[in-house]
Length: 287
Image (cartoon, rainbow, N blue to C red; front, side, top):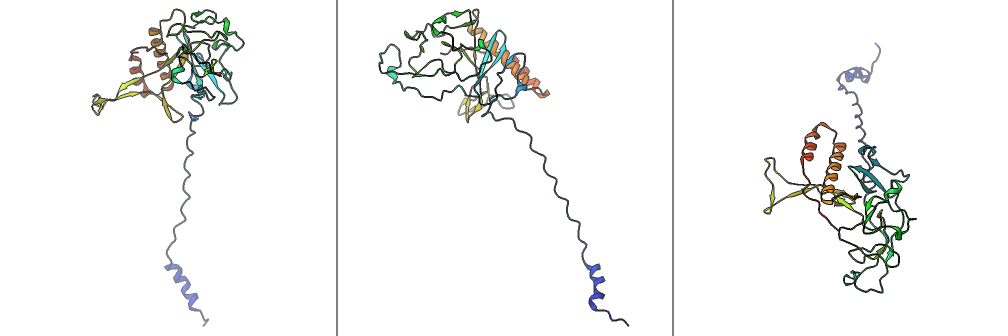
């Protein structure tokens, strides 16, 4: 008989008794790539080209997105301008600190020195959107309608004074520590329209929600650079304009058009209709 070791006899048995091993699990399916996030509003206030109607929007072409520029919108018989990137209009330079009792121009202040803020660092949508640096300030018709540029150079605060040396208009609010037009397109008044959209905070039943005994008012605002602010635009007014009527009219047209562009999905129709039925309560004149 051929000798057989115990190990050889037990091998088949061990193979039968050994538990069946499950196949290795399949590697997990990799998660889908995250959707591409839109550019941060910190970098660009409205970098999406598709949000604007090409027929009514003039957007200067720049190579660097951080370059300061003014974007123009056409609505009704007005032009609206906004700065890009957002808050680019904030002046970062130096200004003289004026004591409160020396702010009025009527008070003599021989030590007063104003820093010049007339650096041209903006890209404009066209030559008619600003006062060209080559234009003499003395040639501009202040305190009246400028027929050459088709805009009002009157202030809502009444007639303003002109500097006896430079001929530039003086701020009707007094000394500011700066001189020149800065980042504003025009010498003299630069009319601006601030969009204020409000509603009462309501419960699903329609009742106005109160807190500490007072109703809660909600307002549409922008959140930029870690702070809230109201959307606003520079604008021009024709000679026939009535501020109280035209401001409310062109803002309603502009806001309705922008809502239609931004809210194209089916569920937004009811909201857009509600906004179109809204009314402009008043146009508030502010210095």
